[in-house]
Image (tube, rainbow, N blue to C red):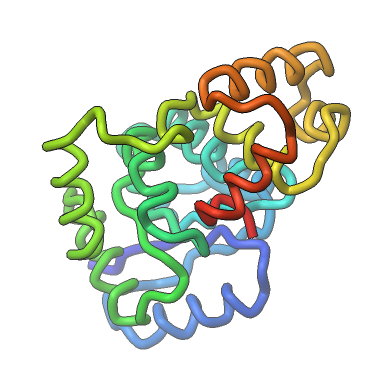
Length: 211
């Protein structure tokens, strides 16, 4: 049986590398590609897929939001999240949101093939290092960093503010009102015990939440 894969990533070079990895595996087939959230969701609705490989950083919408929309439309469709961010920054969030696996873009092509096969078979894929970290987190649920206490939307707003965007720019990107974003910002500052955007930015850079 051939596993039909949809690749979602806005970088042509990354997509080329993923194509090459799939081509080397006789049981995997590239069924389609998308460079934006809009294209990805259209293809998910229009065609049948066995696995989606999803980049978390898309230009028109957060990959986390795309993941949630895919799972609402196709609950049984396995989504393997691919990210440039370190495992310990996003993995827990995407797994809780319904992802079948998480891996960084630094992973070897052979790991990608293994991950696709595993999630297609109904399993979950995380690296051995991440599995150990997740196990430790379960043993110490209260030993979490401040940003791990934020909701998904609050975390998203934090990252956008820390990347230098104004409240208005964040509101436009997320299709929300300025007042709503200001409310999120106030909640974030309160939860994290901070007072300014500069403090948020410094924290985000220090913890590698933004590039």
